Length: 203
Image (cartoon, rainbow, N blue to C red; front, top):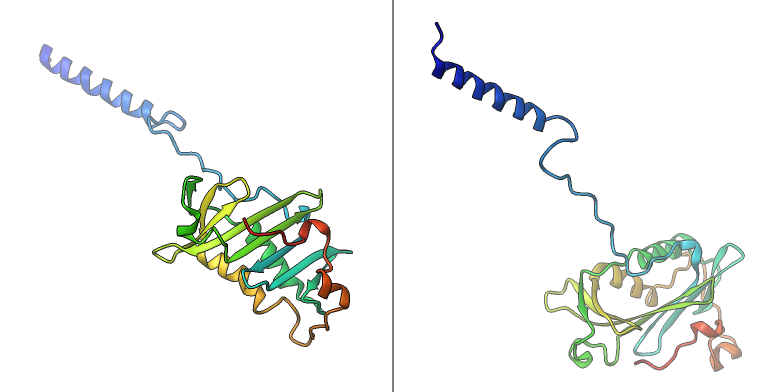
């Protein structure tokens, strides 16, 4: 005859076995599967929304491109045979910018190179709106640049991506066989760009 204590042990074992089976069923795990987090891009835009962009530095150099008749045209410096692939790569880099860190807006601009920014990136939209990004100094660990939006918020952006974008100033996106065109009298007096892309004084 089975002793009473044996029945109790057997009952507890079966109970534990049932609880374990229940918890291991699909969809009943006690652990919550983390949902993928969305990437916080700096600009919530699609490439089709971009009508043009301009990159300038603190010495006055500038590269300006506009999207006309389904192709990218280099207005400054003027050139023929624009390297469309390089321009599209630059657009994708701009649209994929995301902060490495957010620093708020309570920082001394002079201490991080944003009182007189090294570079300014302006993105003109088809709608007529415009996004402006100011680039300051490298961070102490050289992994990114201090950057400021027009609303005053300061972020750190990837050094690799920013260097690639401002590199267009040294190597404009033209085909190897293309040549730079001589500036026109109009471009000398004022850059031949749409009004929203005209450079305004640095903040």
